[in-house]
Image (cartoon, rainbow, N blue to C red; front, side, top):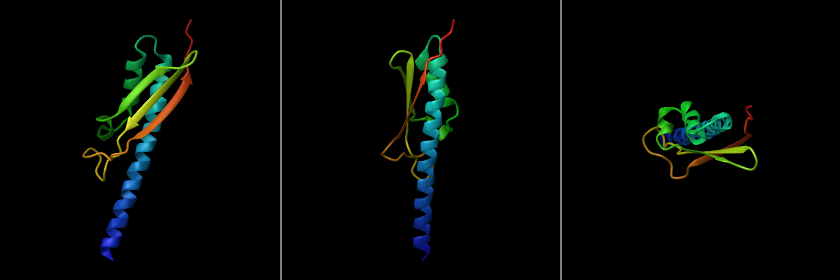
Length: 109
C-alpha cells in the first residue's frame, strides 16, 4: 500500500507544480504587457524586466519573454516557462507552459 500512496503523492505534487507554473506564466505575461504598453523607449527590455520581476528564481533560468507590437497601438506579450520535475530548479518537464497577454498601448502627450 505504501508504494501506491507514495506514487499518488508524487503525481499530485507534479500536478501542483504544473498549475503553479501556469499561474506564474499568466501573471508574468500580464506584468510584461503592462510594462510594454507604458514603455517610451525600449519596449522589449521593459517587458522582460517586468515579466521576470515576480518570477521565483527556479523559474527564471529558462523563461522566455517577448513583447511585440500588434495592430494599431496593441501590444502582445508571450511568456514561456518550463515546468519543473518534482524539485523546482533542477530539471524541467519536456513540455513548456506558454501564456499570452495583450493590451492597448498608452498614449502620452
